[in-house]
Length: 492
Ligand code: ADP
Image (cartoon, rainbow, N blue to C red):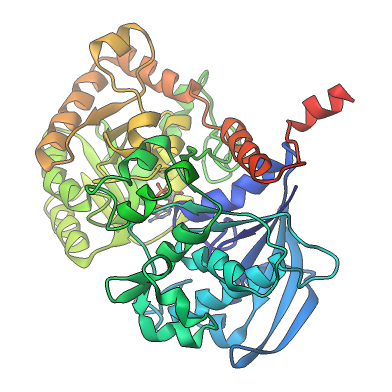
């Protein structure tokens, strides 16, 4: 199966969150199931300079008003098609925002053009390679299937849209439609129109052949008014098309036994070695070395992630002899509040506003508890990394968090399956209670070691989930079969 994946970010080249982790690791996992993925990404400056040996495979003299080229290249096992459109992507800042953190004013165009090019490739733009199926991710590439539906090319291939977070929908004024090469009929309520605006994600939901989201629980939640973010109606209208497939993690990138960012590597048999990482971590955040658990968060500091709840509970953690480490950035009021509390508890609370891959790994390898108090969470990856690193998660019971962490209640503890602490509903008070439960468990070293051990044994590799994606592709592609490569070979 030849699959074109289309994404606005991909690890290790460009990342703002879990989307990049998934689009960067899924292709490797799918190879084992006979699905060969090429990934179309925007030619951001960082990405262009990181990928060597690129070759031009197509030239657009005038792509929506400016020249552009399509390059192919490989990077750490990824097979890339890069849309080098300097007028759209050659600028300072992140993939979506400028250096001051403001959305680029022409994001409507930057990602529409990416989607347009994806649809052209699906329609046979490249003489040597045409995909059997297109896989799009989030609003940034959701227009691909809208373009495909309205293209003159009658020979359509199926498409899969994966929703990594329904909160981001790509809403723009309706006037953009005439500027992105789509017919005005797409402005209807059964396509892009959304309460007087256009919604790129809604367009994808209406036109993709199949829709997935990143956990079965979130798939159920988003067809309700509570968590449907205004698109529950559109999603409910396609009941057979929507499924949930939980994310896996890249077991090579997130492996405490080989992690190059860890001063001391370890596995579940050599947990004592974690002490060295703990020391480095405390020094990195200028915290004292007194005994007591280290609670930590690596996250966007937003309302969704419960950053405000964390800020409310921070003081108590410090008062009861714990330490708190925060790595993240996001809403200014949450950042200010956390920094202010850290100022009152020097040596016990360390807050770093920013994004830093190396420190994220060190935190997982040295802290005792990861706190993730999300109000909603499509899947969540941080808690999966935490499990693998023996860092016990404290999470709200929502979306993917509810199905990847087993609460340490009495029954689960005696059955030796508990891996963390859940609370519900997501309020500061409930987080406070969950933190107290974690503190109590930490005071019993045997119980704590068992929790760590059970988490480290949990298997969140891509294997099972990749098989589910492969099965979905095969279902949409009559005539194609999928099978783990070893099994396929054995049958020959
Ligand atoms: P989301 O994609 O909603 O932000 P996920 O839990 O799915 O949340 O994925 C977040 C990813 O981004 C994880 O790989 C996490 O380690 C990483 N991350 C989040 N904030 C930071 C940060 N400040 N520094 C480094 N990595 C971060």
